[in-house]
Each structure stands twice: as structure tokens, then as C-alpha cells.
Length: 207
Image (cartoon, rainbow, N blue to C red; front, side, top):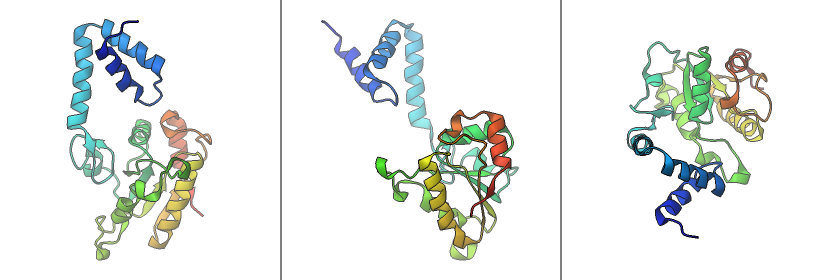
């Protein structure tokens, strides 16, 4: 059966996307082929723009078009509280609640030996740098007083929260964990705003 080499190339690239199998990639490729030329080109331009203009904030690790990001430089946010999350989508989830006014730190994942993710693969060193007291060369100027561990309530997220709590214990900071309002085994990005807000408000001290 005849097939265009360019269509096959597009399918090969689409298969590389998360949760996209070969059949899904075929459907997407054919959809783009049938779509108006302007729509397909807008998609191509959007992909190019996000690769060229969007990067990671060197302070918190969130997506941004400027460095540091707007959340890190906003003087209205509470600089004494840092919420530690796994991915930038978790920042979006908390921001949708409108209830958290502190700052964030994005780890870039969670500890998972089975997947080969170790502490060195996460932005843990950067978090510790932010929390170091000013006399030790820290960047926070002694402002940060509480760290909220808001990793996902699944095995990897719980392991990451436990690991971080042990690292942070000697720093003398208040270390809290979001409450169990978020179902075990779920991801924060899929939780509704009310559940996330209650989980944040009901956070508890890490023992």
C-alpha cells in the first residue's frame, strides 16, 4: 500500500509524544493532512514558538517567558512560604484555586527507582540552595519559614516527600504535607479546585 514518506515521518514524530500509540498518531496525522492549511501552519508555529520562547525559571523551575518568572518576582506573594511540587502543571493546578499566595519550587519529577529517577535527577539541590541561610550564602535572605511538600499522593510522591522531609529537618524550618483531601494514587493536575484548596489549608506537620 502506497504511503507518503512525509506522512510516515509525521507519524513517527507523533508516536514519540506521551500516550500516543501508532493508531492515534495515524489519526492525528491524517487530521492535520485534511485540516485547512492555515490551521496546520498555526500549530507548527505554536510548536516553534514554545520551543524558542518558553524556558524554565532558574529560581523555581516553572515554565516562563522571562527569567525569573512572574510568580517569583511578584512582590505581592508571600516569600516566607514555598510550595514544592513535581511538575509545572501542578503550579497551574494550585494557581487555579486562588488560595495559595506563596512561592513555588518545581522538582521536575518524583523519586522512582523503577523508572531510574534518583535525587540527582530532580531539582533538590536547587531547593536546598534556596533554603540555605544568608550567612551560608543562601539566596532567600532568611525569608523562607515554611516548606509545603505538595508532591502527588502516590507511591513516588510519598517517597519524595519523605526524602525531602529528612533533608529539610536540620534546617529548622516548618515542613508540612498537604492533607489527604486528594485521593491516594491520583495526580494533582486532575484534582478539582475545592479539593486542592482544602488539601492545602489542611496541611499538617511532617513527622
